[in-house]
Length: 257
Image (cartoon, rainbow, N blue to C red):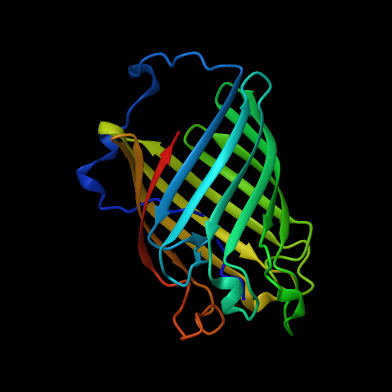
């Protein structure tokens, strides 16, 4: 079944960095004014493409990239993101690519409280799972809403279609609680806890977590993260029987242009 996907960041013991060295906004230089409209590209590689704690790439590396447009005046944004995958073939279908299409609006409710509302479509070209017994089409659309409090956030995603190939799974939900805390020397501590509910397919519901660090170096954003889940070890497996939700250290490097 769908080994659920979210691009790694990570771990801990954290490079000798402690909370006593958190970088406060008042100590930072005033940010430069942004243009009214921005377009950026990103290209990266990851040691194991994990989404919501579950490997999408059969516990193997993946290539990823995307394009983003942002209207800085009104807070609107749109973009696309792609990754190589293996889970649709492992489930008996076809295809080796995930294409995400998204759009939304973000802004501030108060000085310290932000919001982000949008829609995200996960498209799996030639996935063919609708023809496989026990599966629905892998293509999935979710609506999401997020509230941010300083470095922390709470997010909820709600599927308006079947979820990642699960039959009769419309209205499944994913709860995401996390924080990205700026440390000294340019490090960011990444914390995440998630809970995936698969409607009418309760045995596939699970929880996942991540602890990691990220840092930009020579223009590339590097991430190291420990990721794990309590997913059913007999259901979330590769064709060879390896558990795709196992605890793992994931490393990624992403360049934005």
